[in-house]
Length: 279
Ligand SMILES: Cc1ncc(C[n+]2csc(CCOP(=O)(O)OP(=O)(O)O)c2C)c(N)n1
Image 1 (tube, helix red, strand yellow):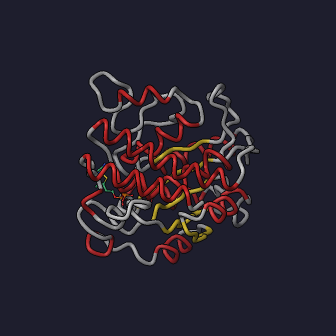
Image 2: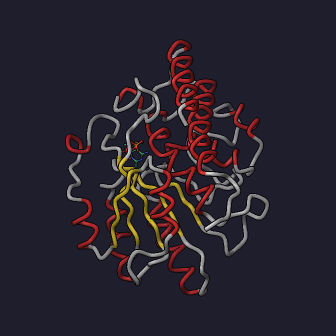
Image 3: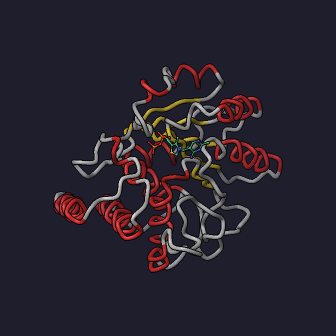
């Protein structure tokens, strides 16, 4: 847990600010995974401003908490959050997706604050299992967090990792599922049915909680209160909405990696400005 001087109101305003920012850089870069970034930004806001014990000026501290974003395609959400926390100057994002920039369309360790290269779905969690085992062996108290997409969930490597995490009793491992129920070409139900996720994870030996993935208070309480059950890895199903915060993007598959045109961009920004006034 980190102590952050931000008030709850400021934390809520931060979510809107981060949404505006990620849209700004996707618009400028003319590329990005818009819907999935908007669906997970509240989770990242809470992680980086209320949960993770990390220092932008000492990122290699061996006792830092680890966060590996397995759904690497939502890198714009990660970049604007890292920039806001001071891992690099926000102006670096002007180069997003430009030739020879480190700020490419998936996370890379060349960027300060990024633990692991991700983007090929199904790799973040297995790496986190290794990180969590290493922490146990070294008797270190830090925690290991990862964020999975629900379209990523069917990757076979995840299910090997679920087995291994329970086998090694990794109660220092927190897997958050960005459960927006949509993938690229359709809903989970259409593309690959993964129900019932709680039953499956519990049967694999995990402790499972469900939260509203846009409720900052619920996220903070769930992620900050220690392991759910002694000796069991922690699985958090965060119910979210793809494209959350922009009316015409919410739940619309077209925005999986859609880039707004100038009119859509202005409309999106004005909706978010309106949302700010209601906080
Ligand atoms: C191994 C692999 N296969 C395919 C892809 C292409 N791909 C990128 S995002 C995506 C869909 C992911 O869906 P989901 O996890 O639900 O993403 P979200 O809705 O949270 O953005 C796919 C298939 C990939 N990145 N890696």
